[in-house]
Image 1 (cartoon, helix red, strand yellow):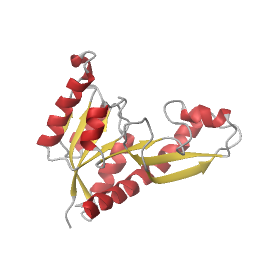
Image 2: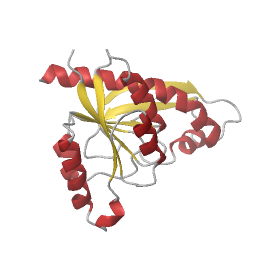
Image 3: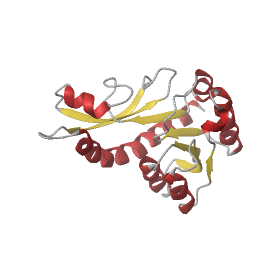
Image 4: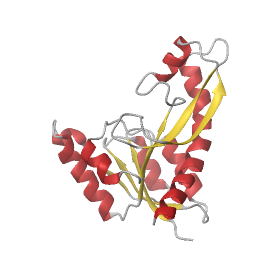
Length: 196
């Protein structure tokens, strides 16, 4: 079975990245991590990746000032050098330019902590609580030029409990995300292979 070469983009601790790396340790998983890339040199997830035997790299976005595309061209060069075939955004806290999104369209996925199309962008848990929603969840979707706007691959939900806060909801949702993302990445790999 051909495994797609996977790059994971992070900005912090990378708990979803860890879930993907654990899943990819199985020889029958359809993606093989070849690079973990962060826009922050101090991201804890870079160490986690190295401990897992996955090459890691930091490209500090601050070094490029306001030139977002120059930063992304540096990222793109590293991704290409690693032979990347699919990208998983795992807490990568940068809005990507249309240039980068178009270059990787159909080969880049993201996990978002809401049941899209509800609550695109930030503060998803607070917005779900404020709306009185009965449930919250997470969505894995293809990345498109619009923020959190791409086609949905897979979702998972959990009930909002009486007394839930943004912190308690986020903490309960993390294990759900860690099951959802590897399953959705496997689906995305199958979709890419079907197009080849």
